[in-house]
Length: 288
Image (cartoon, rainbow, N blue to C red; front, top):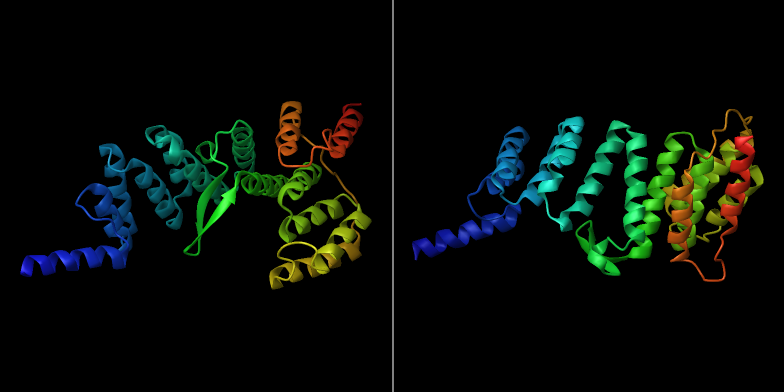
């Protein structure tokens, strides 16, 4: 009877603290992380789990999350790049997401752009979601379905943001327009307006902001969105001079591949999207 009670208490402990059962290095790492609140000790046990082949997929991802919390971001990036080959194919997508988060924290924009382009190529080649049209995602404890189209728009949005960090507003504009064709929302709309304002295309930027203000995009009623619109309108009204706008800096293969990818998620009537005609013309001008 006493043994049964102790077993029940152990099971309850694992449920309450969200710690897996067992006695291997991965379990000890999670215990140190979540119960003892000793992240440094958790990292030691995570390393042992990886080296010992104990739940390597979870061990590598969880270790890098803990490293980020301890501001050991560069070390976490190196760990993913060095040991992701030990992980299953199913774990690669979540590792990419962790890696992107780490690259953002380090300000490694060029690496972000390269990884996001790679993810877009994988989407086009049907390598995401294990070949399925949707996947189950989780946010704030709730599960929901994400389609390949929505994932494409999310990756494009992240790519547009990375281009903005590099000050390449024309490239960001192209990418945000593509993302909006698939899954439009107020956040991407505001970022697109910002790109247009930075290129002194004030009327186009103002039109987009007015549409956000009128509630024509998902998320338009969010207070943060309203504040962002007001900030951009102030920037718009200040009308800064156009200085040193960088070129598109988009390689031809990527532009062509992006067009093919987006055609999968847009109506068939637009087989050659007008924005790519604009890109081709402008790139020719830049080359002169």
